[in-house]
Length: 227
Image (cartoon, rainbow, N blue to C red; front, side):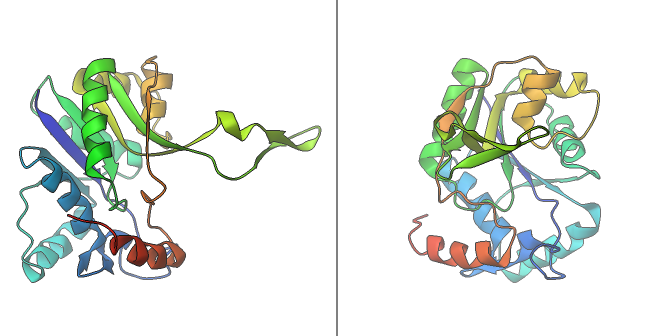
């Protein structure tokens, strides 16, 4: 079954406090986005990589690829105004009707080969595989009567990417969605498509880099990663 990696990179530098889009900031010796793409390519050199970027960022990306001699094969698709629209554009660019696609945040460069492989394997068996980690902190939920109420964290998970699906399943869910305000693809599959969600174990190193604090943490994590 053909494998796809749909890398969504539509962020800005707002929360990072910089004019440079966060996916183009460097850690180690290359921009974050290059590390992310490299993780998928080194895990499986036959994977078809689809990179979703805002149209106005494509020229800058090409310039960075030249500067860093980055030549991993990938196909670029223009993003939309929301994450939902960007993922839909990426899915629509895939010609195959069958296959399995991992949808991954461009600013999560520390996804392990083990998780990548497991996500494809489980998705092929069960229809989807959603990466998650158990909550480590105590959690409270706002309540109109009590102010806040404590939740049992043993039943709660923090959802990460990749979120991996059989192509027919996730396409079906996106075609049935009635709005574009979903914050992740598992929610689209569950709420719009009616599909049961299957979790796989993620990693606390698999951080999403969005703030200066995340950037500092990323430099530390990078030192222990082996390509």
